[in-house]
Each structure stands twice: as structure tokens, then as C-alpha cells.
Length: 81
Image (tube, rainbow, N blue to C red):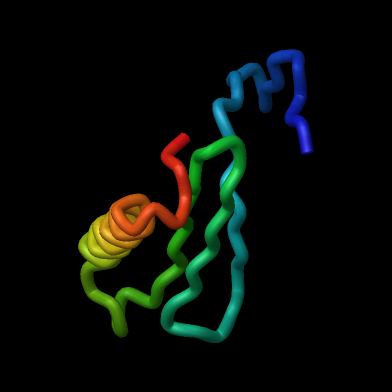
């Protein structure tokens, strides 16, 4: 799916990207992933009484995905773009 060709905005502010989100889920952790044009966006919704440091969790998730990506390239299963 191709995105908009013209610049889009919201109340006079240019939009760089839209991130998926969900509100009101009865869970302590909700992870949304969006992959588009070789870029992945990760959105976390957390209950901070259950997960006190969501930024650390997001950093760890990013590091893990990078390790998985490197392992796939190292095995030659996918060619790097």
C-alpha cells in the first residue's frame, strides 16, 4: 500500500508518520508492531503498576529484534536491503 504523495497535517502540524495504538484494553501489556517501507514502529501500552519501566522494556525489545535480524542475515536466509 502506497502512502500519501502530498504532505499531510493535523491542525497545522505536518505529520511524519502515524503509529498504531489501542486504548482501554484490560491488559498489563499491549504491544503493537507496524512494518512499512523497511521501517518498523513499535508501540507499547503498559500498566506502570505492573511494568514500572516501560522505556527499558522497549529498549530491550528493540535490541532483541536487532539480534534476530543480524542472525537471519548471518545465516543467509534473507539478503540485506
